[in-house]
Image 1 (cartoon, one colour):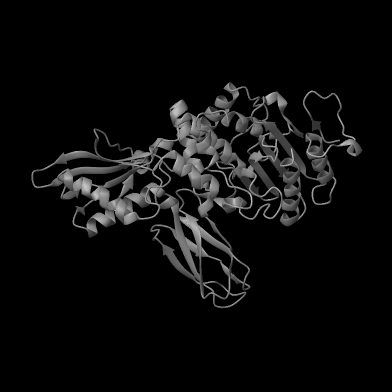
Image 2 (tube, one colour; image 1 turned 60 degrees about the vertical axis):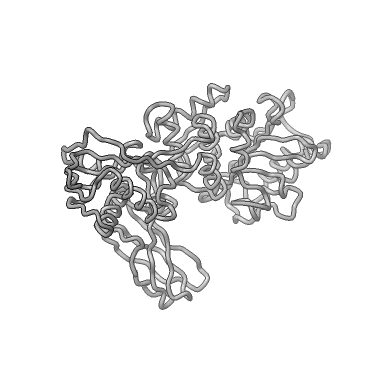
Amino acid sequence: MPRLTLPLLAASFLCLSTVRAGSPEEVIAEMEKIQKESATRTASLGLCLIPVDGKPSDAFGYNTNTSLIPASTMKAITTATANEILGDDFRFKTEVQIAGVLGEDGLFKGDVIIRGGGDPTLGSSDITSTFAKWQAAMREAGIKSVEGSIVGDATIFGNKLISDSWHWNDIGNYYGAGACGLTFHQNLYYCSFKTPKVGGKAPFVGTDPKVPGVEFINEMRVGSSGSGDQGYIYGAPYGKVVYLRGTVPAGSGSFTIKGSLPDPAFFCARAFTKHLNNNGIEVSGEPTTIRLLTHAGKSVTARKVIHTQESETLASIMYLTNMKSNNLRAECIHRMVGLENRKKGTIKDASAATEDYWAAKGVDMLGFYMDDGCGLSRANLVTPRQMAEILYHAAQGENFQTFYKTLPVSGQSGTLRSMGKGTSSSGRIVAKSGTIGRVRNYAGYVNARSGKRYAFSIFFTNYSGDLGTIKSQIVRVWNKMVAL
């Protein structure tokens, strides 16, 4: 029998005939009813609510202590943690550095290093304006030409870009872009195809921007009109071969999908080299990275900073992270938590810092496992109670409103724009969604009609029904929650 949890009650079951409307028992009864329905009979369901003006011991729910896959609700934990450890006014910093000797004629004998600071927004919208700032800093330093190389330095997060548990059919696509210390252009590129005939091969047009040194093997086919983007890019970090598979829809003449750059730091160094050569500062050496130099037994020392570029505030970056469920931003934020708290920007250190932080707040972290910051990994595990307690404690923090405003609102914004629309829960659920194969979750806050606010999480893992049915089941629970 599924576990039913109510505080200070000895009963382990509910008599549905005596359930009072607008009570915790009614919410739990709805979950028990859904568990028996065909779409979710074999699924693992979980729910936990905690009144924000109460205590963690006031928690109630259903299967509250079962470890379940959080999917992108993990971003709520990542951003809530960063909001407290880094602060909402934190800014990522990228440095332009030089290592060498500058002659009176403006010839710089040495290397120009782009030292990444983990900024997920660097060059995200306008590469040219970013490069123009760096070039202006070089000119101000007196550099007219470079006898050396442009070097990308991504060491702040180490060389491991992604979690070991990410799936092969994710990591080559834009949403599977890893957290590079020198993230650039959102670590993505565009692949274009022609779509001449349904069932035939979709000719590969090319990429924008160019990704030199990578071989693209095209196996993409043309699907029926209206079939949508069913194309996948298979490639690994630092890889030299990429496979294009799946289908793109007929009817448009051409179609574009997005991939993840295999080596963002090298891409940045190469693109900046090209920019300088085309705009009056000749660079004689080939672009490279600290990773490649280290592999070759070389190093760059005695650096001097000539320019520092700051990102927008963490508050601004978190907004898109949660509102649009941006994996790359979540991963970079997560790594920075590790760097700030444990002096290392690895996944392992970031996850340990996160777990330690909430454990120190009194959250029982038994059964919690964090293998990334964005929730793409199916190895992640969180109990409904852990999620709700973390959100409860976040609501007590001085920067809570910053975090709260990043979360989508049911029926109104972000990934919840259509969820619950036209129901009693519309506008009253403020939460992060989480979706991967056969997993649908939400975690955030419910503003009940009584005026009370609850931190909550609701997890549906390994369901067998269609997504429309699952979403309607969740909204049924939401409607009971807002009646509390």
